[in-house]
Image 1: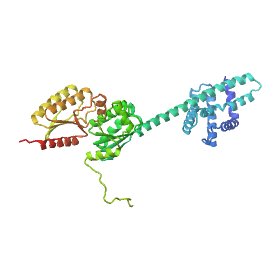
Image 2: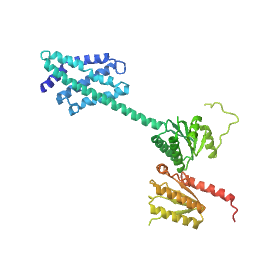
Image 3: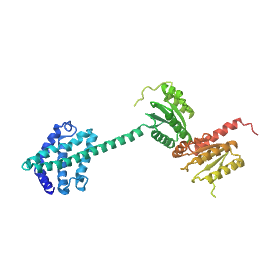
Image 4: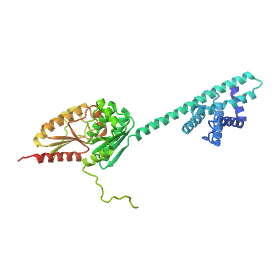
Amino acid sequence: MGDGTVRLSEWLEVHQTEIIAAWTRQLRDSGGHGAGRVRDAELDGQCKSFLEALLNAIKSDGTDDIDREGYAPVRDLLNDMSQSRALQGFSPSETATFVFLLKEPLFSLIQRELTSDPAAALDEIWRLSSLLDKLGLFTTEAYQRSREDVIVRQQQEIAELSTPVVKLWEGILALHLIGILDSTRTQVVMESLLQAIVDQSADIAIIDITGVPTVDTLVAQHLLKTIAAARLMGADCIISGIRPQIAQTMVHLGVELSVVSKASLADAFALALRRTGRTVTALKTPVLQSVG
Amino acid sequence: MDRIPILKLGRALLVTIQVDMHDRLATALEEDLSAKIVASGARGVLIDISGLDLVDSFMGRMLDNIAAVSRMLDAETVVVGMRPAVAITLVELGLELSGVKTALNVERGMALIQTQLEDVDVGDVGP
């Protein structure tokens, strides 16, 4: 094994340029990397640094265990690469192919160097193959991890985006509910609404459910909870934007929202203004366009 | 034993809860408050719970009780300054305090009591 390692690293060092050339050619031919998403210079750089890191790892560590300290630079490199590939929209197999395509140049090199000793060549190929397989799998795992990170981040963003509490007027807030209300989201909605009530010293909160596709008993219960919590903070709630079909479903389900509800956000806003002692009137001469 | 101070503010009583409520303190408050309503002839009770960040079902029921007792003694109870987390907890506990009026802060609670007193005074024939 020791001899093999020394031999392999020597060959890698001597034929480095040749291997990289063959490898990058293959990568380009495979299509995945040639679609303009990774520039040629970048790809060359990645190949070169990966091969160098692999060479160092084989030299310094001498084993094939990629979890060991010696392989840390290789792992870091693959991690970074998988992450950027995942963000660029590569598929998992395209990402792993990066490592797997290294096999062919290396195997043909070994074959050439060890023509006289087929048994040793086979040994060497077998060893290298399993090492590259491990690295390929590692790449896929890293890819998967970074994709999951992206998904988690997007979920958080969606959760935050879908509960905007906006100030309509002094003391009047509007909460636009968009999407399906489940327990987790209700919690987020409730918290952001109550916090907004405190921050803006609001008297009235309009809950607009135009963007809620279905209202079943559970969603209604969540709504009622939110309204009850707002009331405990001293704010009144008005529900708006109940669509005709939803109103019918709710009545059929026997759900009763014991709060004021208005058909549209505009109606609810008008009511809220009236309750806070304000009114909207039309100007006698409308200002059609503001100058300046 | 600690007691929660009850301040008289015009025709209303102001109770500010700034310590963690334990059950005995709550019961004592209920007794003190009902005695004070009768003694002072107050028409409104403001309970400021902005300092309270822990509530349990007992606390919720106590607020309900105080409101019921006060109403019986002809005083309106307004709970003010409830924190968002407390409101969520009470709702999750199923305590919606439907017999209690609420307001965001002491100022608004006071205004609420004032308007109610004015409404009542208009109807009063009184001496």
